[in-house]
Amino acid sequence: MTKEKSEKLREIYDTLLELGVTFYYGSESIAIGEVTDIIFNEDDTVDIELDESENFTVEVKDFINNHSKEGMNYHCFETVRKFDKLLN
Image (cartoon, rainbow, N blue to C red; front, side, top):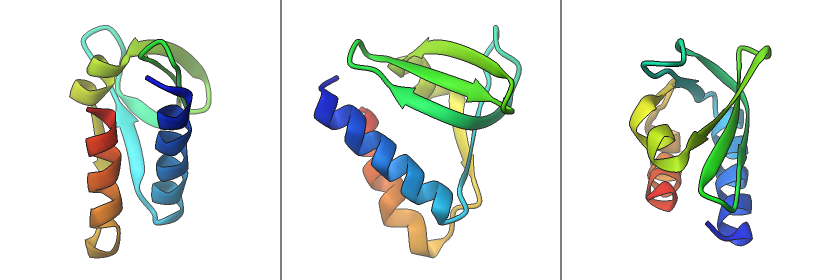
């Protein structure tokens, strides 16, 4: 992932938070929690902070498969689509 793409993902993530979208992450090895901070790295990993207390580094493909979003509405639908498209 390029630095530009990482920065754009973070920008869109911040916009979605401002629009009221909440991100969650959980997998077989990580209990589900609210994503309270996120960094998209150039080595195709994602550093996530869950519930303002636990930090994890996961592969982008794992983030794609194991994250969810809550609080989406009509007004942020296009922004969510941009975020998801950029992740892939």
